[in-house]
Image 1 (cartoon, one colour):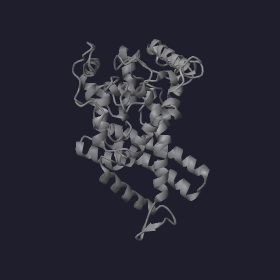
Image 2: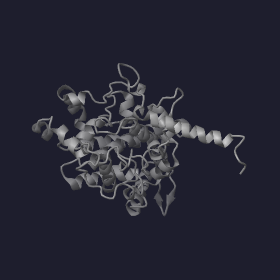
Image 3: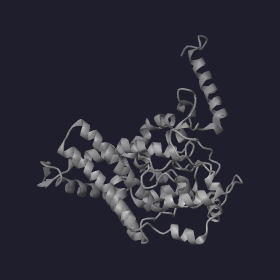
Image 4: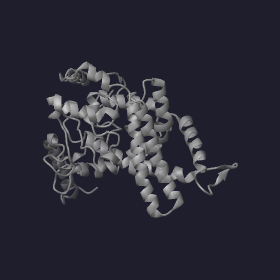
Length: 377
């Protein structure tokens, strides 16, 4: 699920309808999706594009169990160590909720659209300060305008994109040996007051009644699980859960979101869905924490967004064996070792000449600033 950000609906393209033609002569996103679907038998598409159903309910319960267990661990043994440990566990649960909310945006939870959105709002989006409706509009723009200026996550100069795309100051994202990698981009993008503020307030300015009401009810309910909780008008208030949840959401979970966005798309040429999206490694503890519920199959998701996360792993294996263009795409099977580890990848190689020019401009500017011949202010 993309960042919950107030005002993003006013920043993405005014017409968020699907792009059916490309002004540059390249196939549009929808044309690319249609072409990819032609490689897959219709019966398999029908089977794999059925909503997840009971699996979704089980995973919602699982993620909330992790969140509540982390809260109770801190409540019964309050210390700095248990608070930090609880934050890690809570971030894992919140990442799960976020990915299930993402599935709900594509109406992949249940066959009933109304039930799908009700589950999404009540258990997934509201806790993370968003709504299914608002996120669906923004996320649809990400799919339809992938890699263009109107992409709300990775569009150049777009006010809601990751920092290095928004400011286009790639020169400052290099690591110690002059290369771009996932970590150098992350350390640049993570220190971003704009993204932090947008993440903190979420959709509160758009739907204040819904979010304030949800969190008022939740803090009262959590008061029953906090011994000696303070009370207001005779009602116990679970303030420690509120602080732990949102402290985690605005820090560790936000950082996980930024790193996952970089893994999914950053540093690749935005010429097509195939070239601008990755499949990251599966089945390690790191993947299950950062990208739970099969969220690592991001290329498959962009080609077939109606396939629920529950079925992505199975479908991925079939595509690797049967669709050569998918098997040869940006697919990584390990993070640090092996033939082509993800974190050894050098990013933004396609724009290195432009970055070198940017460095020259900055160098000229700095030289002029310190030149002894420069006029006094």
